[in-house]
Amino acid sequence: MASSTAIRELEHDFENKANDLSKLQKELDLVNEGANVYKLNVPVLVKQDWAEADANVPKRIDSISLELKRLDVTVQDLEAKQNSKNDEDVLVYY
Image (cartoon, rainbow, N blue to C red; front, side, top):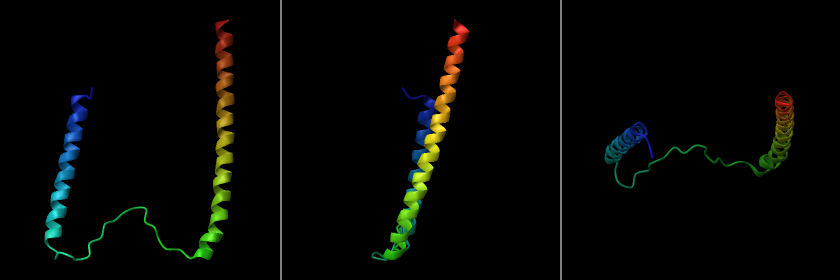
């Protein structure tokens, strides 16, 4: 069951969003129907030259592969430390 604090926070967020929508509606009332209206969405897709994209894809794949290898090494190090710690804990109990 949700706490009353969490419910109050949700209600507050809802009220803020409703107020924001009301402000936007007032702004829309200022322009003529059919006028161009833009919405900011991030990230934005931007047209890119095919040759440039074709050159960037292998670089990105290499970069991602290197990052995955780095993360694998980090995970292995952490698992080794965890196993070492578990072995120490077992030795203490015997």
